[in-house]
Length: 315
View (tube, rainbow, N blue to C red):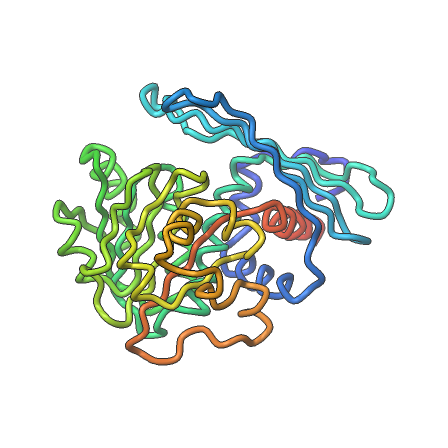
């Protein structure tokens, strides 16, 4: 496709970009010099259930600059609209000239799922077979697909969600592609799983550490604010802890800031981020390890994904 096609729409992106290549690209890009990042969150302080606008910028010196605006409106789900809508602009890193407009929602889904999948490729047991998806929102099908790509031995998926209607709708949509089923009892499903991916909007932990079996890998996606958590203190105490980026998680997201402030864990208990892991740091030390990966996102990952998307349309 020529450079004259400035805007890349979601349908075109999904046809051209696949998780196998994106996960590999993210692993390579984490061995580069980290991009400079800056975030700004616009909200309505003190208003429960408020909407948000998140602006994320990143600059990979000499390569590219990217800016994403993501609007998070949880109430949209009552009108059968996605909760997240986003736009992304990619610029040349040397001249500042805009090079692509990219559908930001597609970029966000691909980036988020590939980020988690890279974590599971590096941390989950290679023989993991059973995946539990906690949450049935818009991210869920992308996370299921990406984890299957990263962990090819996965053969069965179970889905738990507070809303049974949304859970069952997700299962019906994916039953032709996976051995997938709905579950009602979260504790039993957690005990069954080798890999757990949580993508919810909860502020109170859903996942309890005393439910976890040895060897499980936990992918925490949903919490993105200082008041949000998906896993309880016991989960964090029992696990080897990892994040996608120290700079965008440890002091930025309630999943870690709340237990650190309470003395449950220390910053030093976060053993590595993706920059460390992709450069050879030790992740899992044995089959019995419980590993937790906090997916915090970040403008650097948006930029990596945008660079890969652009490359797919130039090849």
